[in-house]
Image (tube, rainbow, N blue to C red):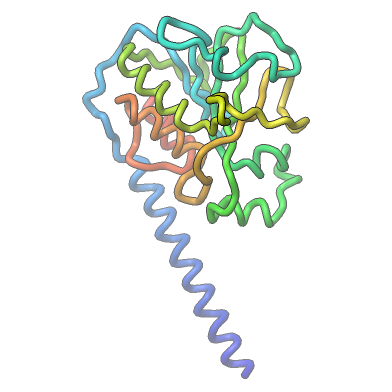
Length: 225
């Protein structure tokens, strides 16, 4: 009996190790294959990609002739309610991670398990900024109006809306500062579709330089050095 237990444990371990090996091989390979190689450089609209070392946000001008983001996400949803913001950072991710895990020390097994296997809902995190500073974790991108329109549509389709057509603000104290807010999102986070996959797909949708697939921010930032 004991031999059978160890046998099945050994098989399970081999399966898990084999899966992880294939997963990271795919990460290594696909995150290095560029898409939209012929993307035209430059454009009328400036935006940024911003990383905290793990998670990528798409940073957009607060308002232009294409969209005023304040009509979608209200500054009044933030603690500061500061109308001087010039930029809006938008990120998509697992709702449990966003709201229940302010630090890695707060991470629960149930939250991690649900997130890895797409068992929980998603949320969008928005942050208002007065200015942006280019550095190793923040890169400037210039895109055309038509490309920006595609990116706007992609982000808008990531929000969940109520019956009146408004995004659904998540009332919570689990914000990261005085200038951010959370909203209900569409889709589920998983090992194969992470916050960085979402950002990468948004750039891909708007004909920017991206990789085939990445769950990590490095797969995006290697194309914007």
